[in-house]
Length: 386
Image 1 (cartoon, rainbow, N blue to C red):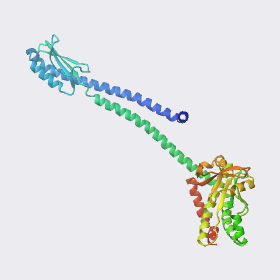
Image 2 (image 1 turned 120 degrees about the vertical axis):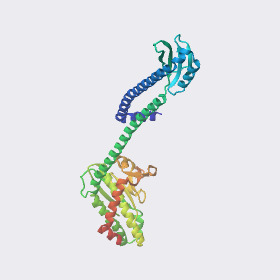
Image 3 (image 1 turned 90 degrees about the vertical axis):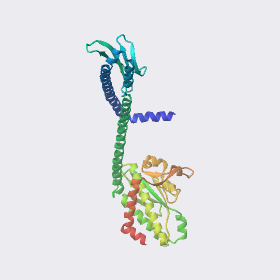
Image 4 (image 1 turned 120 degrees about the horizontal axis):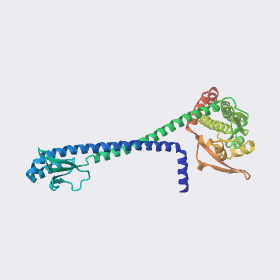
């Protein structure tokens, strides 16, 4: 409950501007709507009263003779016909002594009565007609009020919809800007700067056992095929190869920020994993020995420590220490499953490694394009045919 209250307060603070605009729209529409409805109600009331006065005058002219002759039967007939009209709630014929001669309609009409005198030709008053108009416009007024409420809701929803659309467009534009900004360092052929740095470590799975089983010439042929791909990737990302494959491989990336360097190292690792798998499938189809790798992206400058962490990872995965994943802001650019995080320890050092499944969609397409260009290049085609 505390969390919900805090979240609500935070949401209200974030949306203060929008809420202020919605409140302003609500107040403005209420002011205009109340004025409009009052004007409509007044106009309808005036129309009803004018119609009632005209009808009362007409009935008074028709009933004067029956009042003079005392023909109450005819007066009751006229009263019944008048009360049957939708615009009439009740009608009464009264004598000059205010005695009810005839009546029809509701016993307790809500509207104020309209009075018209019944006169003979010599202007002698013989009685009075009292007519209560029926509120026939009540349903119409309720419809207007319901329509007004609907208009207010539509206006508020329209403002919210405009805000959501604007935010979506702004996010898309920001995402496009981010992609362009991210592509510049990723595709750059020139290292950005001397510091800070990030590193990509790559170990060969079961490398020691393979060295015992294979001749040195065969090992060199297998490793060199993948190492040539790694060098091509280093050129694409402007990285420095500190050690080749098979010799505690390490690539160094430099950029304007450590987060940028770490992202370049992660992109290079994902690219190497992609092209290495492609090459391994080709070698398997040709009946030749493929290799499998463990990869680590880190800012740890101590090469012995980072190498120990690298060889403790899982085959075929690019790993990032969990703490560095957040520190380098890679969690916003990569897809991963926290439940697959693994703990490694050598007695002195304990590290939580997060395997990265793939990059976010916008970066994944970039990696795929780079892999296609790298494999389609002269070196890639030559490696595939070896």
